[in-house]
Image (cartoon, rainbow, N blue to C red; front, side):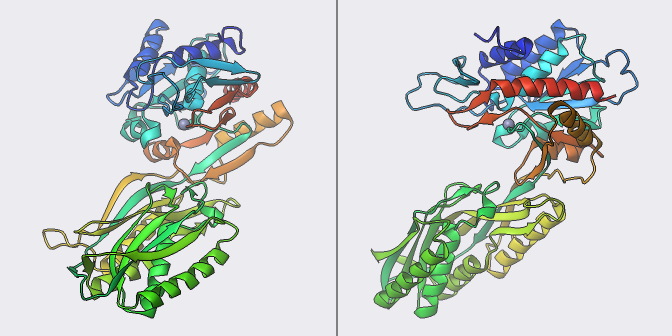
Length: 487
Ligand SMILES: [Zn+2]
């Protein structure tokens, strides 16, 4: 259906990609499709066991002495569909729909993120009369589930030291830096005893928060349900003898939690309830602008076991002093969060209370300093000791590197000038407080100079995802202009 949509070659390849199921972890077929494409055009290429593929295009005449340029995008897409959609996204092609200037898929994600990047690369690779330097087109797998392809990628065969990443979603905005991050799981071991002598049980619930993405929305000052719970418990413990039974909250470490629950035991349930209700008023006023739906409730409950006084003190202390939210702002770019963290998940098991933090920073040293801070906080809070007797309280996982914003970048400057000349307006330069594959490439390729852009994609990662066709047309023309100038 897209055979008459300009640029014809780009949309022809995009439609072909949409006929191959290519959700994350299902990228072998699409990677092989690209390998077969490279073979049919006799282009140098290599694939790896992670399904990443690199296809090389030799320099066009006149560009023999120009430096190699890397083009990069990811092969996989997020598979989301409406409840009514019958399609099996592991097997069936997407059903494309065109509505005015928008392309979408019926009842599912479109995978314009990042299929349009792959389509543009294939369209450039098949053409012999596009002026450009030697190109290394790097197509990675499994970006959407933790950048697994980029993490596994061996960059030593690449000659390029400058790169255009084609995985940004707002036309006219150049991304020039991203955060690195990791998940820090802190475990605190409680000691348990019978609750029968400790008084009556109360259930405390925090509900109705706004929540949001722990990277792109961390600066909005929204309340974190787990952190509020810590403050409420500290307030309650200051007014009477309180024993903790459990604390639980949040679903994902990269989402600001919208609800949390605690169970406590106290000999003065009426007094403690009053304190909690008063403190709830304070919190509602504090967060009236960001979290108008906030509610805190304390109700009667039952408990068989509870933590001893010392364990309760340690864990409440940990929750009330743990850092959370924005820690520092960038000195280079206005409004860019440099370092933040989010206490996303709080869980109580018989062996341990665990707190899972999503840490992000565009500065590697600040990131490790923050991780160290969580480590000493956990240790001073009497974290779990490993079997060997060594303190093993903090576990770090999912570590990914930052791409630090560079005040000067030759490849970005090239793009800015091309943009200015084509559109007679200035592009926006931004760095983001979330991860991009550029972080891995900047980490693996010393001195890599990089910039990221792409056409307008709306509501990505949802069945409402749609791509602006006129934006693809402009970005395609812009990309060709940049290639021509990349002497
Ligand atoms: Zn993407």
